[in-house]
Length: 435
Image (cartoon, rainbow, N blue to C red; front, side, top):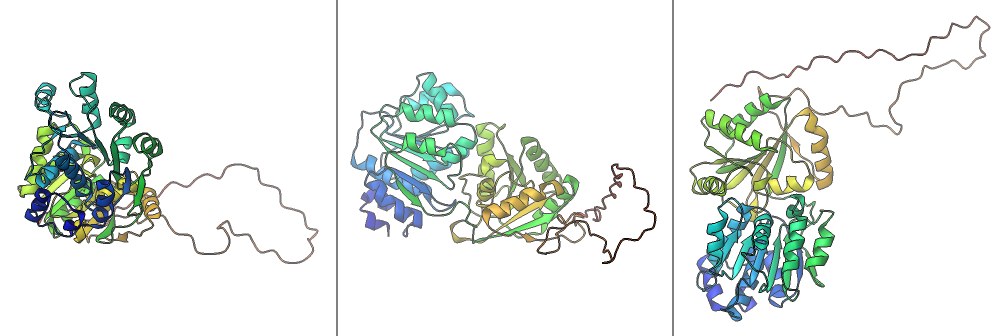
């Protein structure tokens, strides 16, 4: 029970209004240490309740030790605008019976109105690295009063190329502060330097393995041969599978725009989100998904981290994620908070090795599935017969006798054996019929 943490009555009232009674594992382990002022390095899977785990101790600190004449007292750094906005919304729910206010510092909106809004001195800043550094460069914001620094999804920020910005932001905060680093994975090569520069003698809470499979998510693969077949398979799945909301992941912005148009042409209610859209456009798409005006979101990996939308029970990887950790975050949009989810990956021949490497990395096995009439002709590389010896050309058996004295056959000239032309690929599927 949250009452065990001796929280302020206003925070307990907010939790009660949200029907939050029992803390998750990450909240149970993290909150007491954070309330004690410890620096923390926490690894926990997506959907485990990390926002509340760092949000409650932060609000308790600000509510208990009020400093009305200071600037921003807490900074939460997040990799994407969507995650920053989501954190701000969650913090506002927890703090609704207090006078603590929070604001976002993200790209995608005009700089001057944002700077004017920040002059009202919100106690909590939730920021993306690029825009925050822009404010620091223009001296429109100060971090000299920061008491708590929280890095959420730090490995994703490093993958996005924000290492230099993160170091700049960390150095702009006071040395005497509490720091917490939360992430679902800690696999980036530069993570150790970020940990050493931001945390002092941290408590290390490893609450999940970064390679742990989601027990609530059924993972399937469907072989394809090219994008034309993938389009038909995708439309079939989104027409025939049972789901409340679905996310389709792709690797490029161009592909995201193309697929969202293709799905709408097939009378499916789809939206799109990627990095080239303005903040208002991305926010609008997310709101449409949340309220049910659309039930499909085509997204690049900008949506893979941190987004928590109720009712997402189907994830489709139109293109395989490039790494195991990214695959984990994609499929982690479903199967959250104990609910069952389904993740399906459409695999073309050139993605088969990548898919296999992700299986090995995650120490799991994806169930193979086909769609009648939309089968891919390539079903993976042929497996060698199990044997104790490596496969190789068979040697002719020779009789155990003395060589004959007959004239030896003339030696053949050394040279390369001509390669046989590849057989044409039969894609093996019938034309897609719209239903």
